[in-house]
Amino acid sequence: MTEPEPPSVAALSLAETATEPVSQATEQEINPWDVQAATDAQGNVLAFDYKAISEKWNTKLIDDALLQRFERVTGHKPHRWLRRGLFFSHRDLELILDQYERGEDILLYTGRGPSSDSMHIGHTIPFEFTKWLQDVFDVPLVIMLTDDEKFLFKEKLKQPEVYQFARDNAKDIISIGFDVKKTFIYIDSEFFTSGFNRHFSLNATEFEKLITNNQVRGAFGFTGTTNIGSNAFAAKQCVAAFASSYPFIFGEEHTSYYRKERLASIPCLIPCAIDQDPYFRIVRENCNRMDQPSPKPALVHSKFLTALQGAGGKMSASNPNSAIFMSDTEKQIKKKINQHAFSGGQETLELHREKGGNPDIDVPYQYLTYFEDDDEKLTRFADAYRKGEMLTGEMKRECIDMMTVYVRKFQDARAKVTDETLEEFLKPRKLEWKGNQNPTKPKLAAPSSSKEDAGPPSVGEDGKPLTKNAAKKAAKLAEIERKKKEKEAAAATK
Ligand code: TRP
Image (cartoon, rainbow, N blue to C red; front, side, top):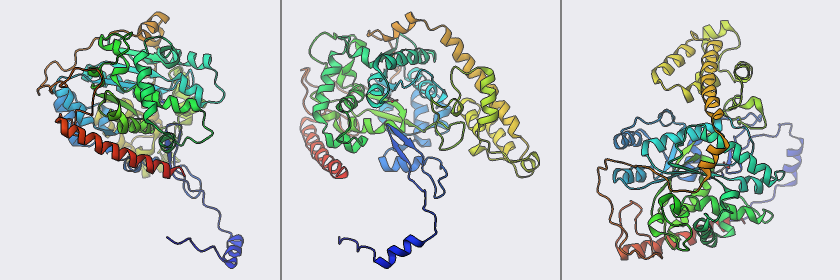
């Protein structure tokens, strides 16, 4: 390509005298540390374009066919957050269903960065969904509380302070109703210094060796001035998806030096907001390069929850009027929804009766869709709102009632979570779960050798076992692909 011609002097002076206002349009930005909606030329915040991000990152949208298969395989009606597209995208969810059909182990993994001690509904919803998945599949779950991450990325935070946030958040998470027999919650700074983390640390070091600066710069936008702890942290959030990082959960010795190949081969399912995908893309691209290869973790991605201010806004711990917090009183909930919730109704009662409202942008209605399970009731509300039969105040009242019940139930449960309860969840231990009691497909053959140091990947893209030669070939191709990606990442950061 030839260099573009420099603008002529005449063109420059024309540009200077033009009175056109400068466009304030910006594109949406989505990465693990920065989530910003796009703005239009006038600087108005626009709604997130989830289809665009799914296309850009090459994830799959969750469609009806997948939901139907989910129901067939698990015997559970898909959660309303799946039916209504709050969890809208995925990677390899089908393979998790295959695994479940065979009655084989699955590890469920999610996490939270404890950046404050107050959690709001935007924080609890992903955990509620995770609990539902755990109930449906009946599998072990690990919840990673990344106090190290928040310490490394937030200039002002001190270690003891973030640790305390993590403990408080863990109690909030427990209040959602997790079963201590099946759930291990860990606070990074504590677990990584406990001695139970030997296999986790070996995995992390091995993974750190596989990832270059160019790769993390490409994936996360790190630069030469990013602190080095951030690079190392990224590897930790990644290897947290390997079941071999937690031998004790599966009744294996954590003091032994050697990691278990059997555990490395257990697939992982990660429910997370779409902004966390860059981490797990890195895992997916590199897990087969581990000495004991792990399958690519599967993902279910959520959208961002709507802030009280409406689409494109952000629920923020530092802005009490942006969200319903789990510590809000009935009065506060009422006031926030009445005064701060963006309404899709008309300016005046007369206009509303005449023209009707727009439930699609109406925050009280949106919140009802998060919590009301009855699809028909919601459709009725939406129709009545559009026709102007249902008023803004009525929609708000429904929302207030629902949110009050949700928050009160949470607060009752939270009052019962003691320090002892917390310690039980934080203790590294063997978990108990049943999995699929009625598998409908035969199990895959176990890996042919039981030696601890494994060779190339034993499972193909389709989840079917590979012959030795095919596995070697796959490993070679993967290596070529990886080198190509590395080059691209390097080029992208130049
Ligand atoms: N980095 C995440 C955050 O800041 C926390 C996290 C760690 C996480 N592991 C995860 C979130 C796995 C989802 C899934 O919130």
